[in-house]
Length: 283
Ligand code: ASP
Image (cartoon, rainbow, N blue to C red; front, side, top):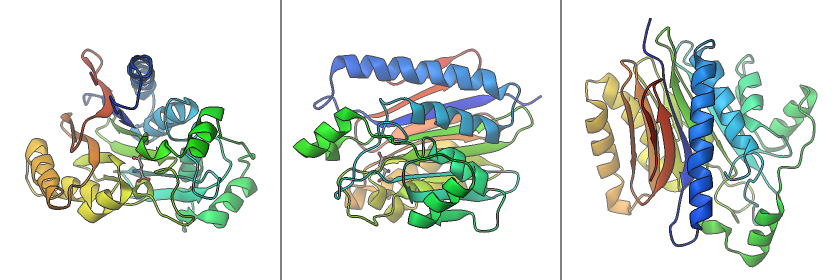
């Protein structure tokens, strides 16, 4: 039996714009969700577990994904999510989908079809045609932030990487975006820069999508591990390549031998991990 591992993130936390109560609430939510998802992973595949964990994060209004998503410049919420499985090497996702409770579950549904990443109206229409009912993920706090034009500092994408008992890795990421973005803007969360895995390593990102795409972060870390870098060195080199343009990013990862790692370029990504014995949560 392989060791099982799970690590999740809930985006960034800013000491200056967030209260101590919110920080404590995020720590508690992340620890509760990582442990619940770890228990689920004991009887499910890594792929099922990352969808389970990200669905719980989407359902928690503390995070900018699913319920509690940011509002775009035209006053509408559009969400993006993707997942990837090391067994099939298939990635599937939705970009700028509207009015579904769990975008990651639509991404999971798309794994079974040929056209696996859908955007905009096509993604929303696919969801409706496949039983995902219309659901508003707006909460009053986001509307108030939108009206006060302060949401741009709230980066709260969610993500999960899991390693199951059969040594399979899977990764899932879901976001409400940056807030106030132009209609049509594409987040990194449904690209291989923000969400990528293979049989050696899985990585999920949060931060400024444009920076994450410029740095091709998840794909680079995974490739470097496959080419023989340790996980720490793969992070070090990839994050060093963000510094010339002050790239804003945070990443979580797991390797096939059960190593977990996380790093951010700016303070502070919120995350939690669990291996059945040791728990870790951001401070
Ligand atoms: N990466 C997300 C985006 O740029 C935002 C976030 O991480 O909160 O859409």
